Amino acid sequence: MADLGPMRRLLLAATALLSQGCFSAGYLAQAARGEARLLLDARPLGEVLADPATPPRVRDLLSRVPAIKAYAQAQGLRPTRSYGRYTDLGRPAAAWLVQACAPLAFAPRRWTFPVVGSVPYLGFFDEDQARRLAASLAAEGLDVDVRTPRAWSTLGWFADPVLSTMLPPGDVALGELANTILHESVHATVYVKGQSAFDESLASFVADRLTLPWLVATLGPEAPEAQAWAEAEERGRRQVARLHQAWLELDGLYRSTVPDAEKRARKAAVLALLQAELRLAGPVNNATLAGFRTYDTGGPAFERLLAACQGSWGRLLVAVGGLRREDFGGEQREDFDAVLDRLATERCPAPRG
Image 1 (cartoon, rainbow, N blue to C red):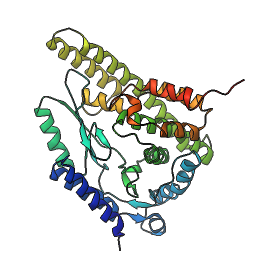
Image 2 (cartoon, rainbow, N blue to C red; image 1 turned 30 degrees about the vertical axis):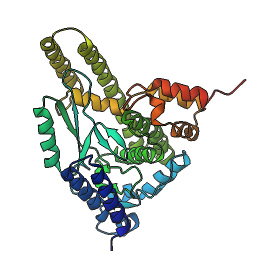
Image 3 (cartoon, helix red, strand yellow; image 1 turned 90 degrees about the horizontal axis):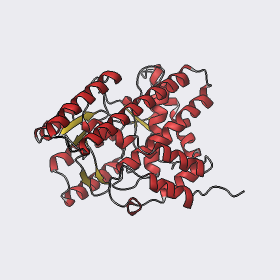
Image 4 (cartoon, one colour; image 1 turned 180 degrees about the vertical axis):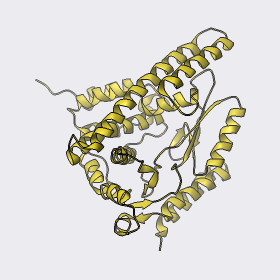
């Protein structure tokens, strides 16, 4: 029988959100139903591993989860009840995230949650509902992007299961699984309300830096899984650099005094070149680039903070764990280098001598 404790907590949380009047009943209902389905369909890892019907590849990947969680804890990440169960979603995406942005400025549309503050996206467990919202936002004249994350996190509110979407095909699967668990574990350890770019970029920085060392220590540097992940990371770094270049070029264009018609024409040329160079399957627009900024900002500043903390992830996590919204001087700050550099001198000062 399913544990009804999480269901009661989910109902209470949904009721609290609804009473705040922050979202329509329809959005809230689909979110509650989708999360409940993830939890109710989850099976204990031990049961899945012992089931002869479990594909060998899935069994092998899931068997690594306890070691990944132990590794995360050894690096200073908070232990949670998450990832002790497995849900086979039977679909290609964990959810559909809708983002929107002004067409001639990097001004993302934001929505507000009572618990987590403002966020630059809405998540749906039903693709049709996500597409309908996307169409509605596009009708307002906004650039819209719908992306499909592999994982779905409740930031420690519930015991999130491993999802089948976290197990992609190929040798990169183990690296992806470890990276996702580490990323979501960072969220459960440090979360600053109303600072999506900081929260997501911190989680990406920590998880990306920790994944390859775990693979190498576990399987050896020549293992196909370690090599596949290293190659994927290098491709990712090149892509991020190119996206950042396009963002800077367009941001300068939008802030200029050239007529809007010229801005639109030059924007189209920049995005067409970007899409061709990166061989992106879907359309690219301001919402796409704004989404990239949410997840990959502040890399050099994070590196400086880690160096000031003498390479200790535990010290870094303690330092950033003390941050509050007021430290950023406003919600949804995308440039937080000064915040991190202040931490490097105040909370992780360089050793004397």
